[in-house]
Amino acid sequence: MSATNIKLQHKALVKLLQQAYSAEKAAAFAYIGHAGAVKNSEEKKAIKQIEDDEWFHRKEVLAIMKQYSIPISKYYEIRFHVIGKIISGSCYVIGWFMPFYFAGRLESGNVCEYFRMKQYFNSIGIKEHDKLLYEMGIKEKEHEVYFLEQIKTNKLLPFFEWLFSWGGKSSFNNIDLEKKYPVEESDPYCKK
Image 1: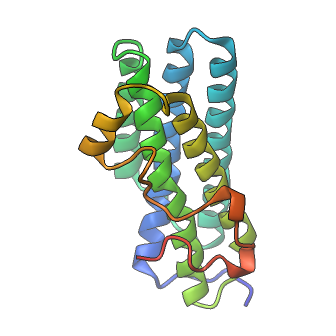
Image 2: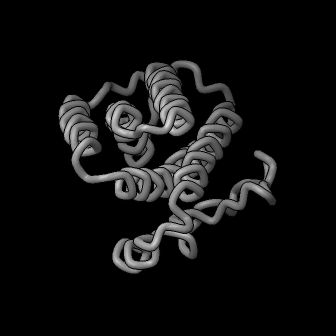
């Protein structure tokens, strides 16, 4: 089914697209501060690449929204703009561990946004975005893995994992990058 000029009658999908579009800006702003706060040049480079990925995801989500005449939410834009700027500034004062930890935790949840979008589109017979949404979900998983790798031996991780339910033993998604399902078999991802 071609999706050109279709008005989506799926409130949850419309809301998820609007939230994801604005939240990608918050994430990009946060990574600007995170990259600025770290001293290691390899970490700076990796975090800058993740920031670039978030801007790319925002652009792609907007293209999908435009295809279905979904308006940008002013509320989400303002809310996530403020959140992103606050997180960006806080990276300079909360130390090295917490920005890596909370970035990984955030990315862990973001993975499922894209797989839920794919599932929602598929539920109304639209499959043309499957590959893109799959790739963006996998990219978010790569981000989660990167951040976890940076902190996996830190002595604070077990306490933070206990407190915030994410870390070396727990994730908010069920994706294993070593054993990825192909796009057309990825429906088991992020099912509740």
